[in-house]
Length: 398
Image 1: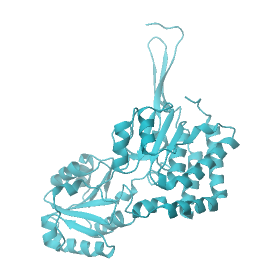
Image 2: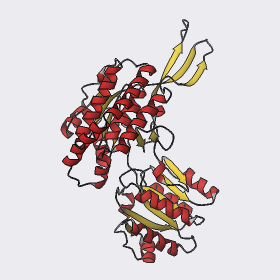
Image 3: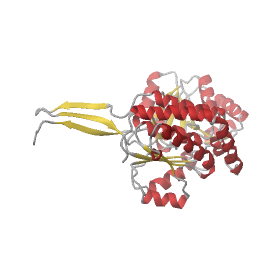
Image 4: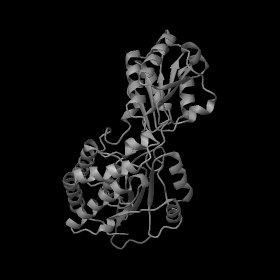
């Protein structure tokens, strides 16, 4: 394990990184164009994540600067106790050691996730997708330059240019110690990582988010929130996939037709359960399995439920444990819904698109965890630590 770098060193590297990204902005965009040209373009969401334009570079720079300005997550005291025999006992946050991040197509992760891991005192191993190889290698070369300019060894940030077979071999028998693995991407990537990893894995990235329209909903809010959740960015895990409508909502059929008309303007494919399909003349779902699916596409499924309890049960059965929202003006109903939904983030009258480290004030995120251990939802700087007990004695024996 590498010796912990002082917080001053870590911040200096991040500040240098921000300056280098600005300095190399045009070169990075040009190299990214080569990655885009090499990509076959079969997946629209993937292509969107792969692109590095000025807005993405601005985001990377902001991320590095914000991380440099945040307080040190390592060494925070969580608990203190003085034993009857005089021993002083405290529990403090500690770095994991080495964190491996496996991700697909998003060069900005090389800065943001790498920066979060580095700021929290960890050595980082980055395993990006082949489609973003040139962009990632350029960004890693900037990491190395930032480390060197501050007199820090470049092995704090390493890029693993491995294919699937090499990755599997490394997961099963790492050639160096790895303390935590964070896969960011689709279900196949997560499954592959969990199957082969020989250390803890934080599962991130599966959405399949639900929105429930209660009978006391403000329908203008409901419409705006659904359109935002479904259409602003289809390729992200906080996008909306399913809508449930309370059958006690006055004239729900009229609202359903309005919702269908609005979604069609964005070319969203709409499927319904029997009740909703009959009322709005849209295609009916082929089977119940579709309720489990995350679409990452212009596609949505809408269904009717007969009570708040039915909505909660249905969401808990099918959702990915990521985000769920209730649209209602009744705060007591909202609270009951939020307390009983088994998801990392629960909303009243707001879009699921906010489940994001930056939006939650964490200054970015390493991943969005749908696991319950050791952290749920957006994993920011302050969560990317483990803990350690410090005991100070004067010769006490038990």
